Length: 613
Image (cartoon, rainbow, N blue to C red):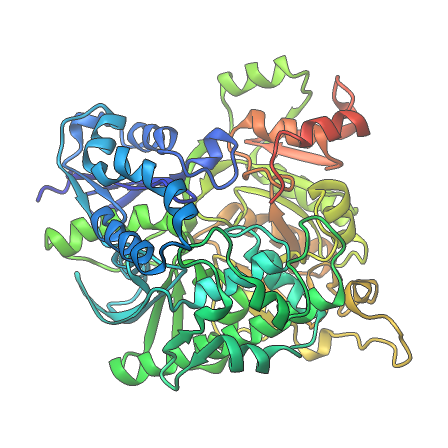
């Protein structure tokens, strides 16, 4: 095939719809639909993401050689039909809710996609877990590696492992629905009152506040984990096979009551349950990885699937040294399936050779729409919004951001290409001083408007990471949790009576804003090659303060997708208590804007635009 062969990958219709464009084996663009529609986790057909990808590649639909969907709808339909048949009549309500969409659209997916795109073209289907595997291995820096994919469910598979060598992937074994480590974790996400497919991060962040007092009960009653990591779940306690909820009355009885009502008070029970299921997940992932290492003999591991975004489990896997090195697809969830499907077509189906990229094939994750240093179009939009700014060259902008953070200010950044995947990596980020003891609460309550218990991640210069964190390898995509090194820790008072979320009141290290209550941190290492701008910012911050660590959180409020455009960024800036903002090479001071920031009532009305996560 020609080096100009263009392949479009698509994921859609479940959650986190996305599109990705690969031209001649090179990943040119990838983006999630939610960033354009401003609907968190948008599952609709990704018209906007596709339009962006085509624009980035300077292509029209007719120029595409192949369009590939990230799963096989016919095999998925077979699984649903089999499941409903086995569980009838209990599954009737779920059947009546799901099947009209299948019989009128999803079952005819090829026609559906061609119609949505306005083209006459054969649509190719890549199996769900093969999409994950391709997204993990083909962009990785490894010539060869073991591959592990873990999520809720694809067609039938919930977990697979295999081997990638050069341009080919071979999947060797699978775990099949309804046995699923991802669905176990989602069941507890649901039971603790969080939203499935987004609240899993909250459950993970809540775990360090609790004690794993229910872990043995989970292993005894709910899931059997083999020495090889194979899992078997006791369906007596679950309702996701043919039902409309994740758990049932027996599950409620086992844990002493019904699921927590969303937005109600979080109690020690939820914290202990979170700690317990996290411990079970950690053990299962380690068992799986040991089995994969033994069976494949590979030194390195590539990971994808929603469970690969559980940074506590992946951090533990890295720390245990089961593999020499891990590489995790930054868009490890369903969005990344779009990229995997396109790469599967180029390498696996068409047989084109692969040369592992340096440092990898993801371009730092910056594959989305660009906010350039200067743009007349953005200037006009910002002027219409009453914005006031100064223009700085890149070096002065880096210095100014570092200076403001050193002075205790919170600075938002929206410049360059947007990140692909759920993590903000410096292109659409809110930044602050990690040394500040009140930064975590300020960001949660005054800017993100989210639960106070949720931790923030550190950005650290890669060359200085060992001074702060016990990390075995680089972590450029914020996908590994690591402990803060002993010499930076602060021991809590021996006589404290605080427990649960009140533990936040006790500083745990000399970088308290990014140190969780168990002394852990979700680390992002910053290197010059992937992220030269943020490397310059933190280097200047180090010069001013002696510290190589800052806080990084996504530029959005609770329930809002990460900001995409200059307008998104400015509106979020004015609706929150962010002190300063960089859009491209423009710098904004909150107190210099023509329009006043929103008051509490106006802010509450603005926040209602976004459904709580």
